[in-house]
Image (cartoon, rainbow, N blue to C red; front, side):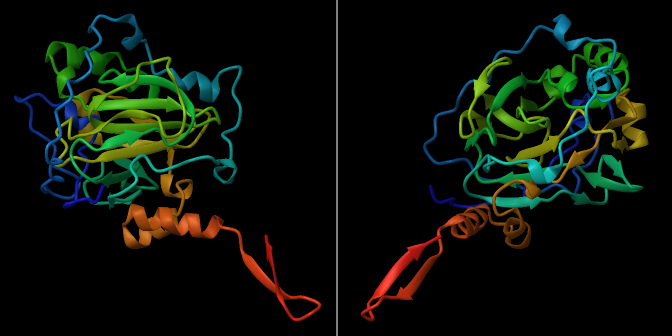
Length: 300
């Protein structure tokens, strides 16, 4: 479907999205802007039911990824160059915010405030698919156990309970890609998968939205290995306000593994990136002169 209109969508920090009305709200990463328009004639889909607050799966003593990084079964994070089989979560739209240092970023990378994923937008309610084969680890607003926090999540969960703020979090899907990395997709209007479900690249996992107080409908896509030993810091005011740990497992730039990512970074167009990747993968036609002067076609 041709996108009728696309506006820049900016992600509000996932942890900042849990601020209660009584607390001072964090500003969008690059200022408030309008989101993409709703698709004409699309029927709204009901959000997935929330997991009860008291569910033991969401209240561990500390973030589980610390075990993957430092436990007895620790292994090295696979190299980025070894990652294959990725596709775009949405087939059309624009890159609205790349993986880079930005003013107001909620993470700290090499001393700079940073945006730890790629934001992409098409239209509100657009289908979003899995970027890689894998198993769903989290789906909905109970995702923090699976996104690479390093430290104790108890005070953060307690704050959410006390302020009844779970509903302020974005809808998020986290998938174990089966290659030592996890994909994080955020801000869904609704999700269509459940934890434990196996998915293939291209499986519908939800619809583009603006949950978590995002400034417009978009998908925030992040990628990390729980075996990575490098870390990103968290902005100190967010740590104080939200009671979250001070670090997360470092992310990688998703445009390094998405087809035509370099074209997307240059043009901001997902469709152009996909077309460029397809053209680069197409067989090369070589014409050779035959014994009687007729051309012979050889593909490689």
